[in-house]
Length: 93
Figure 1 (cartoon, helix red, strand yellow):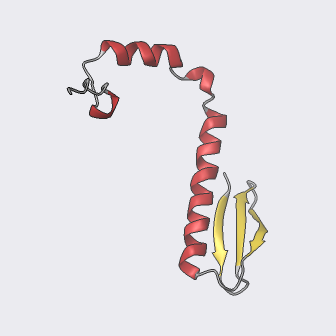
Figure 2 (cartoon, rainbow, N blue to C red):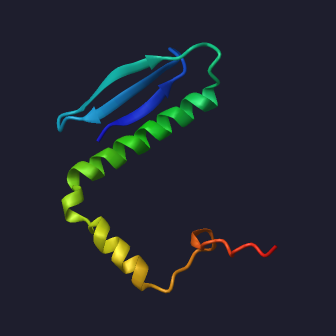
């Protein structure tokens, strides 16, 4: 799985991944000087999160999950009624 990092010396976002005999890395982007270091770190964190989500989708495809129609059926049979899902009461004038 890809992991992203920020290299402050080069102001670059880099990606790395294991090969089994070591890691490889590549520069993804060089950031503008106006980009705060904290924003660059957050970007690297979120890119790593996205990569993990993509890997989970690849490793566990949608065909192995609950179907949408089954999820709707379970929802309709439950007693769950979120306030934002309720129809508004008719207005009384």
